[in-house]
Image (cartoon, rainbow, N blue to C red):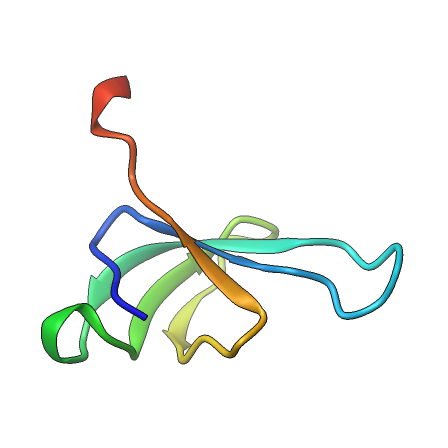
Length: 66
């Protein structure tokens, strides 16, 4: 998994009806865009290091909206 600052990580639910979670990448601490990532969770604004699992996907930051 490779990401850049501003990208979003989306964690898909494991069970039917389970909410999708997402966070914004604030800093990439791994080599060549890899984890760990310093993120801010959209649900509560909490910031922390995150190592995404196989249930996560990256949504690239849309620079066209700037």
